[in-house]
View 1 (cartoon, rainbow, N blue to C red):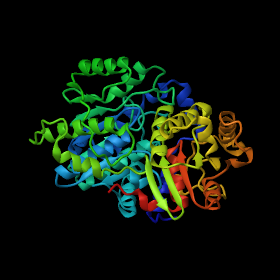
View 2: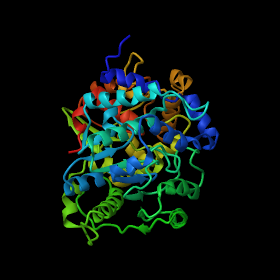
View 3: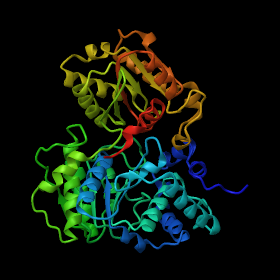
View 4: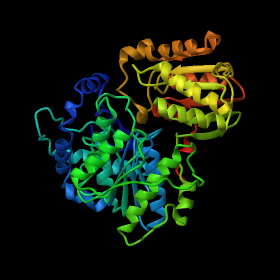
Amino acid sequence: MARTKTYAEAIALLNTCQSNAATIEAIRKSGGRMLEWSIPEMHDYLSRIGYVPSDLNQLNVVHITGTKGKGSTSAFTERILREHIKGRIGLYTSPHLCAVRERIRINGEPISEEVFAKHFFEVWERLEANPKTLTEHTPVFPIYFRLLTLLAFHTFLSLGVDATVLEVGIGGLYDSTNIVPKPVVTGVTSLGLDHTAVLGNTIEEIARNKAGIYKPGVPALSVVQEQVSGGEVLRSVAEKVGAPFEVVPTIPETALGLKGAHQRINASLAVALAKGFLKTRGEIHDEVLPDSFKGPLERTRWPGRCQKVEQGDTTWLLDGAHTTESLRSCGEWAWKEAAPNVLIFNCSGGRAAESLLGSLLDAGAGASGVSKEQLGKNFDTVVFCTNVTYTDGHFKGDLTSNAIDPNDLSQLATQNALRDAWLHLNPSFPADRVHALPSIEHAVNIVRDLGKKQVLVAGSLHLVGGVMEVAGLQGALGMD
């Protein structure tokens, strides 16, 4: 059958490159050993689509990694550069909320379906025409994130961007974005223990992995790290690599477009990254916070992170926070912003449900000045649902996920564990108002029947994106 080369067909082919739950678990159990081929394979894929690594230097890359806040830092950085550089600014981030093309942006806007499909098929057909792989175990087509990274590189090179803000997917050292030989500047956001054992079980191991993006002669920046040992590892790696290292100063308080007290740290790194980039173009900014940066920081938008959306009688409080630290920040923001009385929540299987929910409620109680017990009682309805989009068991194409364990999914194991954790934390809460549901559409349907409400959606960016899709909140996706 002849290809239509539509966006829908591109997404369908892209989804065939997703790793399933078993593969992801194998990588975790390997302790990262299966990732050691990542960079050689990415170089091979890049060659097969017609580029050499040095071509990527044309993109003028700001490379950003970290455990917490790298997406927000990327958004702040892009917004500052966009107001200081005439031309096209590329931004590559992950994950997406409603549409895959959100990951690849030009001047703040996701590329169109037509542009995505055009460049996707150029990459796909070049790989198809040159199927010889690096090793016997290397697939002809790269896995999902690697393919999207190749697509971003190809798109940005084809469109001739003047600067690129490049967010690392996972880690740093073995991440598929880490094949740019000489970025303009690199930065590491706040470090913490990732919710995966692949990158290491100590803060020092995490830091060593993240510092893998530092390059010889390229400024290597970091925020002040809460755990001193992590910061020491970053400095040590930078010195060994020959990368000028700097711990960036915290900017004075200023209006930020992204909510949450933690955003000041992210904005501080973004300011330093933008100053470092602009310096290479002869634009010197000596102040800790230049006046010309204040407007862009205030105008920065980053959908699905501490985002409030009004829709009729419903106030949606959307935050993809998914670690204990980020859920604390989420709780502080949500209860200062409103008084949530409905919760929609999900998290990756096998993680500490009670710890995650407890962090959210503790922070909410602190922000609202009531006890955790009272805060729990203030909820009308609590919903734990899967990330499956629709009630018929199907995903929207862009939101398809093969990473969910089918056994977990069929038994709602994660959702029932979350339900049990909620009832343990809130023993007097009516059990019939705590739901474990098989889809996001099931959850939204319950919310629609409740009348006026303030709904907090948290625990997963995939969940937030699915809620935005099903509830018709796509209009809130813009960054301006």
